[in-house]
Amino acid sequence: MQNIVRRVRELSPGSSPAKSPSPPSDRIQWWLVPLVLVILLLVFFRPFVLVGAGERGVVFSRFSGVSRVELGEGLHFIAPWAQSVTIYDVKSQTYTMSAASNETNTDAQNSNDALEALTRDGLPVSLELSIRFHPDPEAVWQLHQSVGPDYVAKILRPEIRSHVRMVVAKYPVTDVYGPRRVQMIEQMTTRLRQEFAANGVILDEVLLRDVSFSAQFQAAIEQKQVAQEDVARMAFERDRADKERRQKIIEAEGQAQSIRLKAAALAQNPDLTRYEYVQNLPSNVRTVVTDGRTILNLGDLQPNITAATDETPAPAPTTVPVSPQVQ
Image (tube, rainbow, N blue to C red; front, side, top):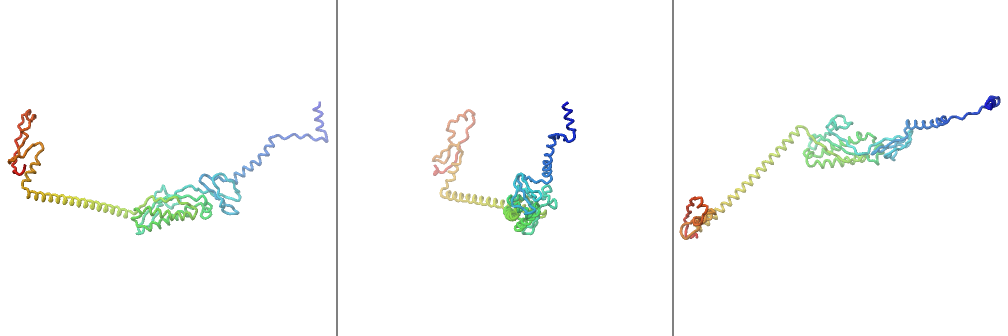
């Protein structure tokens, strides 16, 4: 009955129906709209930039130009409607100029990117180089402002070709592959380091990998090398023959001196020949010089058990006539 009365009051004129509270799901949907708008703004306008390891970011503003304050590694927020960021790799890089197609840089005109140069005597040589470098992390904004991201093709490659050719032109062809090759590399490094530094790039090292010549000159070098080896061999043989000749002369002079001394001794003592004969007798022959004119073998006077057992006849005594002066 109370429900009927309440219903009648609600439907009666002058009475307003009670408002039912809105469900909680409706309030949540109203809060999602701003969140979705923020996400869409982040996706389309991208007001942030991520700088990776070994990189630097250069900020360009439409109002103030290139900023000298570079962005380091990490996440940075920018104003996308007024600013843009260019990423530069400041790690060590290698630029190779080689004749091999698999080592040629992408900006080369053809597969053979070896550097052609003329020596001081006008002979052509082909050089294969590798240049190690990296942009100066503190001057990337300057590199971006003066050259731009394509600094390798605009600055580095022309500078390398120009200065390397100027250095090679100072040396004859024999020094290009000779001991002064290290000096050439040092001069290339000094010249290129100055030019690179003026544009905000640091030169680490210049590597001269290979030097090649024309086929005719290569054959001439090989013939010259063979001729030099022949000359060295002939000089060695001449020195050896000269040493052998001098050794024989020394030996002949010694023998002549010995003969002269013996002749002088014989002139003073004619019995010296018999004395030398006695000195040259075998050690197992026991002899004695008597006051007579014979040298007696005393081996028969010694007991010889082995000779008696084998019944081997003893050798006959050695007798040599001597002069009474040798005793």
